[in-house]
Image (cartoon, rainbow, N blue to C red; front, top):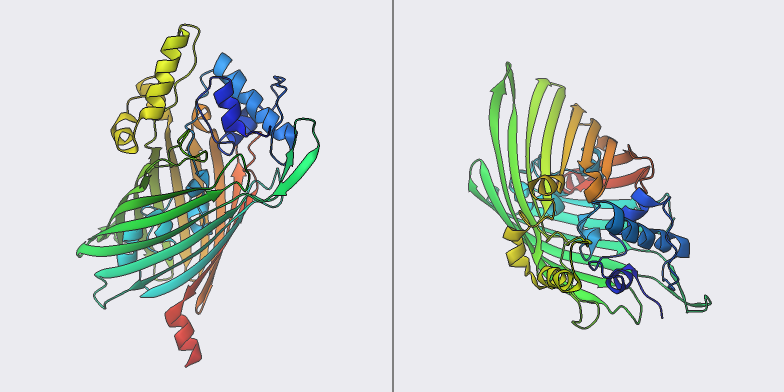
Length: 422
């Protein structure tokens, strides 16, 4: 029988997890060895064994307790600009990638319409054929920029996965994948404030008989404020944003036997852009983000079998709406653990003549909740109708599989294309 990490966790009495989110354990606990004689389906048998071993070891000896979700690729920032600023974008100024971060920013975009393409090779330290691709675009429907529409298509290719039977013989080669298609509407409520609603269709297919395809509908809500300021004798823009993302029902891969939460999250951010001189501008931005998903319970020697089963049942029976409230106070470690679930990022962007861009960012999530600590770097160049951006992630952790991740983005100005054709 071929199983994923979700099945292994369930059989061991642990909260159900996604094998993808279990890469956290690989990055933190790859040197720990716990032998488990269970056939596994992933490209490297040793890799998933390390993941499973980490899950068991962490449950028994530490407070490692990351929050698992279904379709975790929805949490990967797709564009080079946002990634290089520390994986933030709720309040970094409007661009074509606002569809992912906060669609309410489209009401403040300087270009009335635009299209963007992004490509991210993922986990390149481990494999070579996992990648995220996105196509995004928007259009402002009126000259006053009160109404805007946006859309995007994300495709996450998990690469080729070899399946083995219980005897270790190769039986199949499959290609798991996930994609999401969404549409947003942004409305300017006030000259300095806009709101947006995004609807999204999500599909996840592991291309395996033991894991059927799962589909879901979700939505985003966004608010964005931008106003002119004068500070230390300089003019600029102050920005603030809020985004509630991926709010939707649970998904199931086994015809309703088990259900998994979508990665619903709340992000708050603020930024300040100052014109240092006619040719020079500096943007500084800060963002906090938290998953609004129940924290899984941790096994303990103090719990008997019935008490542990009650905790598991309560976790799985929580609805996504209930989780919007309960996720702020359900961590086994109390307030201290809740605070560790907050991911935060800082970003700086320098632009010269609005054509050359240099970016620096920092991103952090506590080791018990995902162990993300990275310095992000990026550059951009704008030439007529085209803007090219590149980002690079340098992990500050010793074993992070995200280290040396590149992202590439291309933004196309429709007005710029039209001007070139005249």
